[in-house]
Image (cartoon, rainbow, N blue to C red; front, side, top):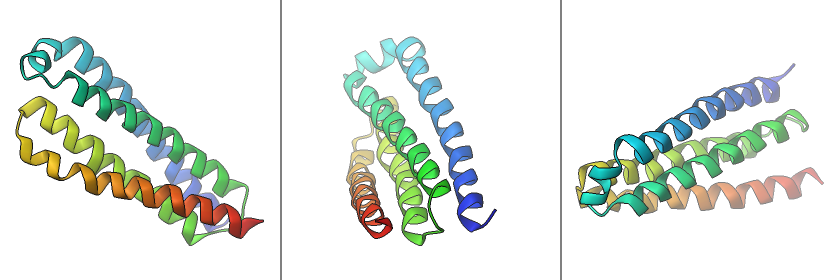
Amino acid sequence: MGQSSSSARNFVFLAGISGFLSVALGAFGAHGLQAHLAALQMTEVYHTAVQYHMVHTLALLGVALFMERTQPSLHLALVGWLFIVGIILFSGSLYVLAISGIRVFGAITPLGGLCFLAGWLLLAAAALRKS
């Protein structure tokens, strides 16, 4: 097994951890933080963080599976890392914003969104290069 397989395994591992965190943070927000988030009017912000976190965790898993079925590709590895950084910046900043109410964290969120956008475009480009 080559570089692609090793990278794919790493991304599957990170997707597993990320998926766990997404579910755990979602449950914590729904049960443990509900009153706090409602008081700050941040329930929807927290929900958005969890939703994007899980969607991009599944996308990361898809990238890993795609890597397993293709030749090693720096493009695909970059897609995986863009999704991971996007989760951290986008969802992470929204989690902190929702819990703390400190609005400056909202300024970080678009950087994560740009990582998601770049990842999706690079994934499309990687698929075209494989055909």
